Image (cartoon, rainbow, N blue to C red; front, side, top):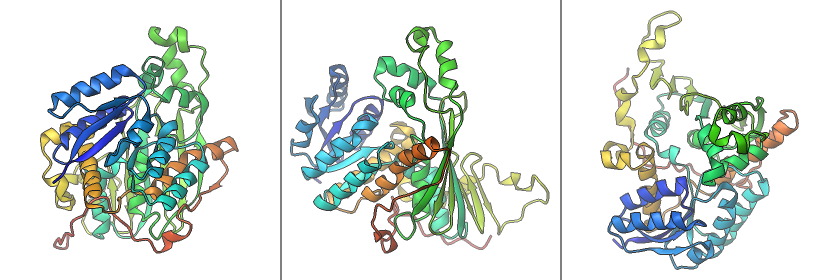
Length: 412
């Protein structure tokens, strides 16, 4: 099979992780072009490519040079505020493009993406890696196999102590520092929302109708910085807009509700906390639990605790990609989900298949940032969610990110 020639725009923390996984997919893709504003990042990336045995890639600080380089695909891992501009340039040039995750503070950006895609037809994919994680794929498969019944409610979180990363942006150029200074919103919704949206058939027979968002006071970053000699003098007087914990509730047309939580400026364990509640069962990522109404549990308040940690009993519900993955591929980044995601993206490009996370998914998921910011700024009022499909969601068919197994289990 002819290898795809791929360009990577943005070589910061996330770009470096993606580069590692592109190189692990060397049977499908060749790293043909690298782009970043900082020469030292480019040099480090070139050395990694050459060390892997691939030819020396094209190098530039101008993303338009990558767009016009005649590549098979471009992956965009820039700061959040540049995702849309680079993506639009690629689509207008007819180059298949995939963009990294993040929200947008401007609903018009979402419409620009949709309009450009509909005008050009250029293939587009949103690189939400959590949609490809084994936990999220397991619960999606349980739902598709009817194990949890009709779903009423889902919740998820992005709980990650990022204080070191945010403050460190003053030296590393990480975009989160400016984001947290200027905005108060659900700024990173898609890790938890993406898998949930797929489970609930959003944009395929269902859609988000309205949301309401609320943010706590902002004190975590300030107190952290004052305790850090490295940052206290330079950032001690900064007032952060972003509240420590932001919660967002979304209502869906088919009656389900979704709860999201952003918690990144206080000390805590990492957690995405995907929870799916249906009429026949319940899944909880935090306790790795599958609770089914068809099984017997002890009576009383703690009866369900025997199900804690039982998730591995349902491995046959995982797609093939997670049953054959190697330890090396798992170690390539984010526990294997980056590798699985890019492998599927490259397959879609090579086989000219529809992208499993498309422009309408990207617009709906990214828009939560802008909508939550509006809700919070206006006293946590409900805000209507746009239909970026312009009514097409009513007849669009659900495309799962991977082929999920059909499991025949004896009645439990």
